[in-house]
Length: 354
Image 1 (cartoon, helix red, strand yellow):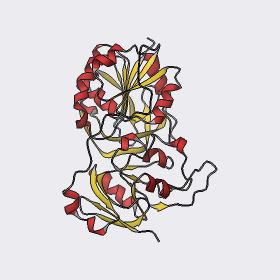
Image 2 (cartoon, helix red, strand yellow):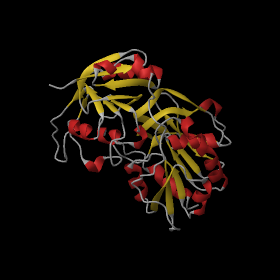
Image 3 (cartoon, one colour):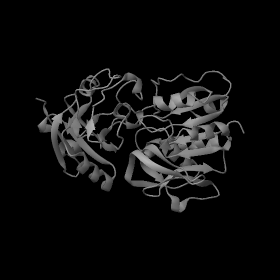
Image 4 (tube, one colour):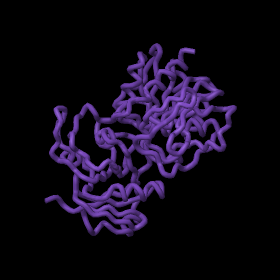
């Protein structure tokens, strides 16, 4: 019989279930993802660094796991919340079961709770802090309010991607704020040399490298944690370097162009339908955002709204007029079952050829 686990939210909401991973206590921000597949990609996604991740799809673990599907070399989340756990996977690609992986990666996890009710709380309130524990004595608001939720995002000093060196021809720089393996692989498919630089790279270093373009990746934490990067992006815009901002990178790119950013409630996590306003094409995307560009204050002399979320009519992407730059609220890399955004990368590569 599995050990009891408790999830306590900062508003006092309490959920009790069974432990599905490592034993212990973690305190972090709660986020949810709506994908039907791709749970291993989410658990190892650098953009989920030090968060407690909720899977809204009820049955998780049924196809096991495979190392080739990981978004990074290890789990990035602190805690994991699922409705129904399948610990006996059935899939020809499976290399192991989910609970064993979570224990090995020291991820505290809970199963057997109403994830629909939990997600409704987050949809109405935005980001929520919580304590997830296998120790009943730690399931108290005193514990939750008395400890920090997480460290600020760290520079990607242990990047699994090749570091930019020299002056490679047609080189694409991945400015790594928390990029996934899927993004790196998708960029490689564009017939360019792809290399990565960490988030603390200065403008001079970025500009000194011969490049076909710079991708500002998605990443963990709050937008306010990255304000020091805005002047660097301003310098890249002034130099007319082709830029692609994704997720967090998209919001930083917008701030560098003095566009307003506003909280997104409910937040966008997992699958979101998006419309290309230029072609009318409707497609499915993968998103991980708590904020968005405020459309009511969008200066059309700076950028045009190119992509729009269908459900709430919020901004999903911009085409800039003052610089060769594209901003995407969604991820274009085509992992975890969402393959429809890959054509945006082709548009980015074309910016570097103009």
